Length: 261
Image 1 (tube, rainbow, N blue to C red):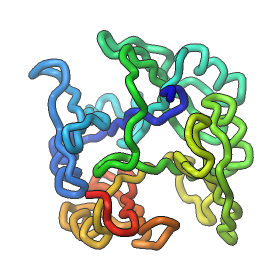
Image 2: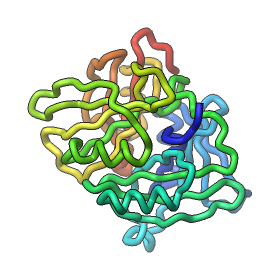
Image 3: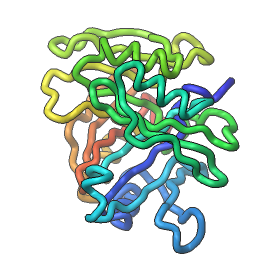
């Protein structure tokens, strides 16, 4: 199975790096280790010994340039610059042009036509796609947007995703699920829809696997986070949409039977 088109890394930009590390350790059980030497500003998230992504501080003087604290993910591509250029051709824009990370690979940040941000990554050592089912992994990727009908062809063209299903969300319209062409037709990477009451710019929401939804919600609240929606039942388990103490949105998913941890 190729890695092209898979979500492979998740970064948090935060005003309080130490506070974020403490919060997510308590909320979802992640650890963090410094990358690139003791003076490096970048920490790597780990769950069960596997790397998930990273967390970097947002200096006050950089907030205008870098934007507000937030999560964003990276999708693996074979050619970062060509994919970013294609995103522009499809109506998106390039936020951060192709940039090399010595010993890691090359990345860029793009913005889709509706305004949602996503990273592109070509790794020097791509390996296999992450196991989305393991405890502590990000298992679902959900686009909250103003026009998923127009967003869908943008992402399908860039990453070769295919639709895996659709369900009626009432006033919000259809919830469209999508998957990778290398995986079985009933396996999905995530979904996209138009929320009925969209009060923020479009964004991607990432779901972390947990064992018990009620325990996870209690830990999130105890650590200073907020529950924005849920817990609610969805096909295959229970979910809750959350916000960390600095206003960054994320979600948790507990599969039926409690297989995650």
